[in-house]
Structure formats: C-alpha cells, structure tokens
Amino acid sequence: MSKTISTNKAPIKKIVKIILIIPLILIGLLAIYIGFILATDSLFDRLDHDKFANLDTQMQTVFQKIKAASNGDDDWKYTTSCDFEMSGDFQTGRYICKSLISMEKTVTSAQEVSDLQAKYYPIVDNSDALKQKTELDLELPGDFGKKFVVSGAEKNYIEKKSGIVCNYSNQLLQSDSNASVDSGLYGSQIIGPIGFVDIRLECTETARDYWYTISRPELLADPNAPLIKL
Image 1 (cartoon, rainbow, N blue to C red):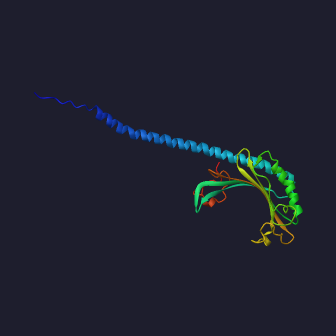
Image 2: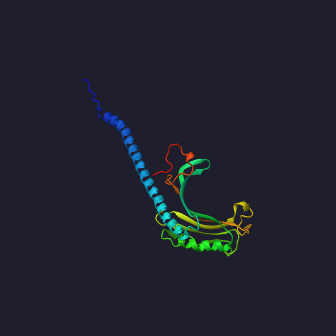
C-alpha cells in the first residue's frame, strides 16, 4: 500500500512574505526618521532665528537710548554680523553671531574717561533688556578714570529675551601711533597727550545659521547665496 505525503506550503509562503515585508518596513521607518529630522531641524532653526531676532530688537532699543544720551557728541554705532565657526582650517557648519553697540574717540585726560563712564554705563546697567551676570570689574582698581594709564572696566550681562551673554567694556588704550606690546600693558602711562577710548556692549553666541549679515561672504559654498538668512 502506498502512502501519500502531503506538503504544507503555507509556512514557506509566510516566510517569503515576511522577507518581502521587512525591507518595506525598514524603508518606511527610515522615511519617518528623515521626515522627523527635517521637521525638527526646521523647528530648531526657527527658534534659533527668533532668538537672534529678539536680541537685535532689544539691542537696538539700548542703542537708541545711548544715542539719545550722546546728543550727537559721540559717534555711536550699532552693527550685527555673523562669522563662520572654525575648527582649525575647517568650518563646523555653525556660526558666531553678534550684535555690537560701540563708540571710539580720543581723550586727553582720565577725567574724560570717567565722564564717559558716568554718562553711558548707567544706561546699560539700568536697561530693562539686561540682567546682571557679574559685578563691574575694574582692571587696575584705583586707576580707571583716575589716572591717565592703560586701564578698563567691564561687566557681563544676560539679554533677557534671548538668554545671550553680553559684555560691556570701557577701555582706555594707547593711540595707534604709540601702541606697542609693552605700552599696552595695564598701568602703562598713556604716551603723549592723546589716549584712545573704546566703549562697547557686545552680545555673542553660536548660531545654527547666519541670521545676521555674513562677514566673509567669499567663504560661502554658493557664491549666489544671500548675505543673510531670513
């Protein structure tokens, strides 16, 4: 008597289906992952952009108050810019962006330096846009604003809306014609009758893109790229 052997092909078909479905599942998961990355990148870019936009708005407010206090006596300037963040000779893909309120002028006495500090520092220190991060630091305490020597004062703040750190500094330096390594040391007597004052409020942080005008457009990968990302 002969026996009939029944072969069940169902398990084989299931295995084949699974083998075919797995790549599709993997492709689907990869597509979801890529979509998620693109969506979150776009979100983080927008948040980063808004942070630097807030900084710009707040610093322009401070600048207008300083400019009003100057009443045309001093040439205050406000600029924003971004530069490539570098690691050695290579770009990291991120940017160093800053807003800068600054004024430079020549002076002939320590009293002039003291008067400038008394005129502009309170505007910065009492600004609603800033909160104190450090105490006022006088380099060569007892000399700044009292002796006509290389000296300075600085203080760090945090801009409230963006959370970006800002540095206020008032530096009395040698004039360019008298500048040298030795004469630039703190406490060095200002050579000649004229010194150089540099007062600035500078806010700087690393950004995901260049939200302000790029300072070296020649380094952009695309020569037709805009000078500022919007």
